[in-house]
Length: 226
Image (tube, rainbow, N blue to C red):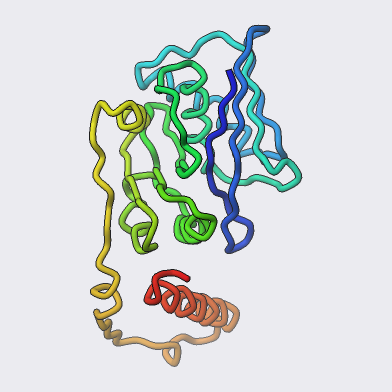
């Protein structure tokens, strides 16, 4: 069996699309990840294997090859745990075969199958929307933040079993939404400013750059994320 599950990763502050290609075949039981994965990605093998078992699914003794495409771009982080698990369960036929071309899966798995909060969800979702992706399934704790991106359906999930049940139409997970206008209508008042910070010029400079970046993103959100 062969499946492709879409995911996102980060290169600096920009998101990019990753195809998680999963091939399950007869042979010596093994799980191998290729496509320039870093150490964190390679460690996902044991997280995924254990999370699948602890979510109530059988991890079949098969030869499993996972390719993260494009293969010439280094992949970093634990974002791929969820899409790898979904690809394997598709091939194991625990998930009904369906077209997931317009869906991205992002999330780190705990050994008990829970989906952990990750960093960098906004640039990944912004890029996914630009690429024409319609739906993102990601950690529940990231859902409110990600829903700022208009035009992208955000589904937050607590654990791997909930995602499988949702894909099999056994449960409903409601899309998460945010009132963007209300967020930017709020005015925050602070009693402190940089004049009260002694030294730390590099840190203050980094904060200024981050604030400028935030302004750039907020202009995009107000315009519907162009």
